[in-house]
Length: 43
Image (cartoon, rainbow, N blue to C red; front, top):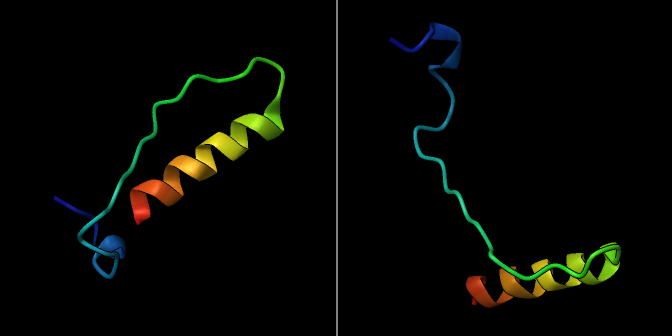
């Protein structure tokens, strides 16, 4: 049973995942890869 305080929440949740090969130690490049994958998936 779902507590009453959650009754107004959305009933559907959309979840996504991206699988990519990271570049160790290069946060900016990894974020750019993730962004590119998300843009491709959204199009």
